[in-house]
Picture (cartoon, rainbow, N blue to C red):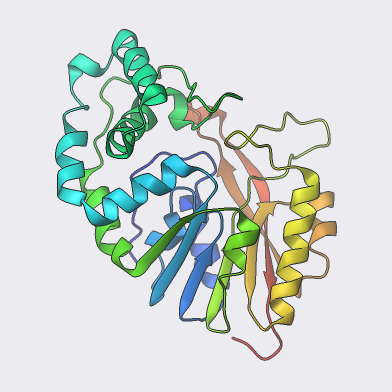
Length: 275
């Protein structure tokens, strides 16, 4: 099956793990993703409908705009991908405009520009909620028109929500399958734990997510969670019926040589008797 790439660069994106995720996702009518991120799983599965959420309001507003105003959006976003804007001075001026703007359409256009021109495709905000990723110095940033158009078509079958994972999980019903891709747990207790959006995803929240998965499976709703494979994650998911270990090159580094294979975990909470 052909794989479709997301139109955004995204740290921790699930493109490399797609085959494993698709293999372990149970059957259902609706896929619920409380941590949609760049949407690789959404873009590469064939559910009848999708409920997609993220705590990042810029991301969700962008998706709603691409869903409803794709041609207009592509036309305005394309003009940002020219040599005249691919320099540090332009980047920082446009980043400042993004942080000051309250126009949702303009912010969505600038968000894609910042994503493709910023360092390593990172999405990071300071405590005031301001986007603060530095300039990336790419020779010729790629304008993802084909990927945007594919997303716009697929998005007609999706509902987008800016809300917590807990709120999103309550939207699942008996015909749903839930896929959770939380900000990954640190590989070691002392690892630098990067803040996601303006809120860090704590170890307590990681454990609470596992608890919510157990609650859903008790209602006969299957849940698949991806994370690093560590003693902590194995403990959180020990009540899952099945855990699978996969190895993946994990890095968004500009230098591909620095990418290392790490062990990741897929924890499947499957109700008895469900395929």
